[in-house]
Structures are given as C-alpha cells and as structure tokens.
Length: 253
Image 1 (cartoon, rainbow, N blue to C red):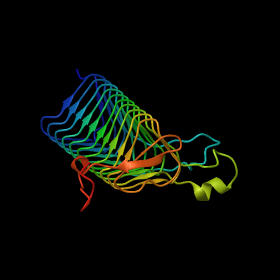
Image 2 (image 1 turned 120 degrees about the horizontal axis):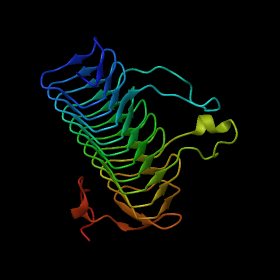
Image 3 (image 1 turned 135 degrees about the vertical axis):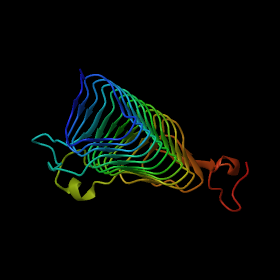
C-alpha cells in the first residue's frame, strides 16, 4: 500500500520515483525519471521537468502569504516551473510563480520566493534566501547564506560569496516614500561579490567588477573595478585574466 497521496489529476511520467509520505497536488506534472524524496509536498499546478531530483522534506509550488501588516498584497500566482535535470536539496522551499532553469542546483534549506526567474545551471547554496521578483542569470553562483532582497538582479556568470546581504529600502520601513523608492541592487554579468559584503538599495555593480569581502557598497561600482572598505572605494582594476568578459585593452596586472 502506498504511503503517498497523489491527486487523480496529477500527471506522472515514466520512471517517476516517489518516496514515503509525499503529497502530490492537483494537476501537478512530473516528467520522466523525476525522483522525489520522502515527505515532499508539491502544491497544485507545479511542473517538474524530466530528470529532476527533489530532496526530502522539500516544498514545491507554495502560494505566497503575507502578514496583516505586510506591504505585500496577497495574491494567487501561477505555477512553479522546474527545469530539466534540476537538483533540489533537503528542506528547500520554492514558491509558486517562479521559474527555475535546467540543471540548477538548489541546496538544502534554500528558499526562493514567488515571481523569480532563475537561469540554467545556477547554483543556490545552503540556506540562501531569494526574495520575490528577483532574477538570476545563467551560470551564476550564490553561496551559503547569501540573501537577495526583493527586486534584485544578478546577471550571467556572477559569483556571490557566503553571507552577502542586499537591501532595497533606504527608509528602513518608515514613511510612505519608501514604496516608490524601493529598489534592489543590480549585479551585472561576470561581477563577483566577496564574503559578508553589503549592497545598499539600488546600487549597480558593473560588469566584471569585484567587491571585496566585508565591503559596504553605498554607490555604483564601475565595470572592471575592484572596490573594498567601508564605504567601498575603488582600489585597482580587475586583472584581465580573471574576467569571463575581458575588457578590450583592459589591465593584465
């Protein structure tokens, strides 16, 4: 006798493997060869493409909720879509209304909120939080404990080190002016952010720039520039050999 509850309207491809005590909701689609761990909850409408693996105690496709005092409005969003060959770790929570690209790796206890777009072969480290409306480009890496505030943009081939913190509200929750001014940081393609750095609201870290560990970025960082300190200041150019997108005539130091 099966220990899992599977809706009659769910569609399971060939070779799907379900662990114990799973709950598979209405109109869920599981592609061929999908592997589901124990005690996994998959909410209605979620789409998991072929070859993906889902760790124990994971929640997929949860609809967003909000506190009575939250500035976020309660809404029903479309389904979570999980690309082919994705790996989701133990205890992760992925919300509805988000698209996860092919061959992504989402580590244990990570959380990705609604309205996000995660490119292919992205790595999201253990305990990372990606808030609503973020975008992460192909091949980018977010390491353990990194935090992307709502509305952040991380372009392709970026590196975000452990425990980086981003913010989107210069008013810290006070005054109505914050609503119009709220804006997350943008990290342009190839840029790297060192461990424990802090990016303030709306800053742009330019292409292939490098933010040193522990820096506090209060203003835009020029492309191909290393910044460090509190507040962060430019100290030198990024060596050409470290760049995924080399600058023509750039530094080779």
